[in-house]
Length: 120
Length: 237
Image 1 (cartoon, each protein chain N blue to C red):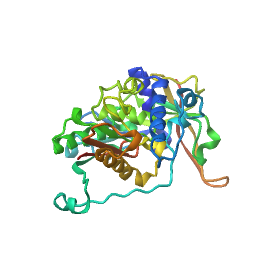
Image 2 (image 1 turned 180 degrees about the vertical axis):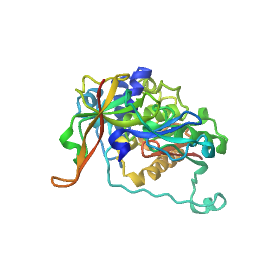
Image 3 (image 1 turned 90 degrees about the horizontal axis):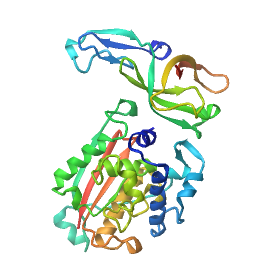
Image 4 (image 1 turned 90 degrees about the vertical axis):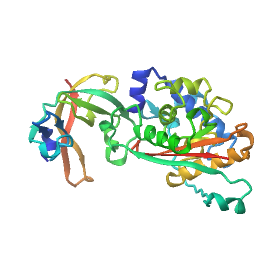
């Protein structure tokens, strides 16, 4: 899962647009597209956010946690957790990615890893 | 996250969000089949437990059991079955990206904007001719964004419109006279038909204590996901 572990998306060399999650075809350039993998630096800023106090069962242990829409420096937006105090997060805040446990299937199941964010 | 950005960008206040729930509970008290038959205050909303900050429990509609039905017939035969048939002037649907973060603007549901434009074109009705509307208030911010995106108020003015009473029963454009999803409950699959039922009652003049005087044109607005789809109907006597 390079996209989830390492924030790998794609870049169209024809129009210079970046995509996350990765796309095999550039929706703008179509057959003219020249796609390459791109590892996002991960630096981004908080576009908007919420703090979840009442979560689904899978996330109850993590409450309260911040969930934000993050705009990466290259342009694409994604939704992810921002690890900091609820009073610390704000719109426009700079963040950077960290490798973290995202969840697990019950007490003995598979552990899922991926990207969360922390204040930069 | 929509509410947070709306507050940040347009100066919408927590009290204005709460005013949606307060109004809809008031309306619900005048609807004998709404789930919540109780008035609430802005303070009640602001003191209720946080769910997803800034939204609290009383900003959220309850998921409810419920059922609703409509009888449809071609216009030319409808009078055989009903003394007060209501005409559907337009039915329009539009979609948008599933993910909120992929949207053109996070504080606008473009699906609502497109569906309502199509519905107004189809019906020949202008937004100023609409006498009342049932909109998708699954969360208080939803009603504020809906009245903006339907064109009842300018973008960013939704919160102020609600707290100033523009959307009250005796306001310029009464919204969610039934009590909305907030007070009626939100039986997901039945909600859209329940909205149509309220408009039919209102246009027939049978809405009792919550009747909008002289209502001739009504609109329903329903949403799937968090704006991935929106459906707008325009109806008249």
